[in-house]
Length: 335
Ligand SMILES: Nc1ncnc2c1ncn2[C@@H]1O[C@H](COP(=O)(O)OP(=O)(O)OP(=O)(O)O)[C@@H](O)[C@H]1O
Ligand SMILES: [Mg+2]
Picture 1 (cartoon, rainbow, N blue to C red):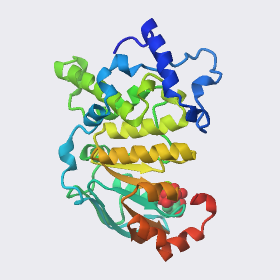
Picture 2: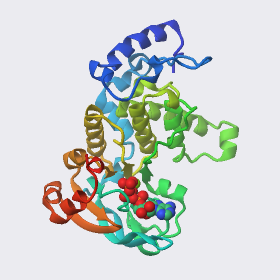
Picture 3: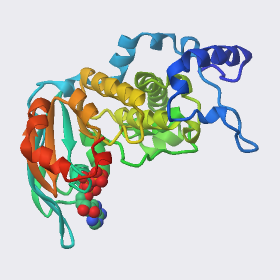
Picture 4: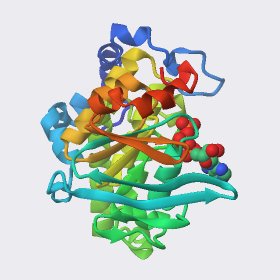
């Protein structure tokens, strides 16, 4: 990568900054932290001019091709990729998930909705190995996830984002994504220490792919910014890029639009659709009904740990049990 602090890059960065901040951005709720007073000793972040640094990434099709590195995992659209089979998760006396069964099909965007405390995040945690079901099982890609450790789950092909953003705040956006690609690396520790040719190649590939991923989610220009200096909406995008960096077959997003204004929600909806169109399968937990109805192919509804409905968005919208579940909670939970 060329030096982002060279005079050329600084000038190019200033120009791309103008393109990057559209008039819409000025009214967004996520403030551009860089525009605010930085604490003493902080360095102002400089945008990267991608056209100079990685000209090939100016082409959206090339970016999509790099992001969806292994298209063989996306075969057989419509077949079950993950099956929840009668999964029950208990916390002491509380049954957070009660005999829940549903499939996530390859190539779909499945919405998982329900009022606060319905068990949505618990379902994610059961899928990603955080909690072990007290009964039932999760089958992923024809393999039961029994006694599978969390890092193995990443290798098997499930990636997630968190309800509360989790990033390495002192690392740059690019470094955060490269950490995600590391989950795929094969090089041994001695290989890394002696910088074998293979290790160097993996490192270079990871950086190339990291840049493509940042561009894919729309924050390529901010590759060198520290994660904590990114506006909130960009942090959410970065989390998605990092999850995609593990080359998942299934991407689980837990309330990715929390705290977004309508314009940001619209952009997120486009991003989720783009991710699916690029060949990934997506599980989306989201409270915003308009977003869920607008982007998902099918929806599963939980209430008090039980599945109360499953179907197409139009069916779910009309479902009396779903309407009753949502009438029982304050408006702000469904807004
Ligand atoms: N680690 C835990 N220990 C004890 N109880 C828990 C734990 N995690 C979740 N619960 C409880 O399990 C139930 C389901 O919680 P969960 O977080 O899955 O709901 P949710 O549908 O994700 O809700 P929200 O929309 O508020 O995120 C809740 O009653 C919650 O308090
Ligand atoms: Mg939750």
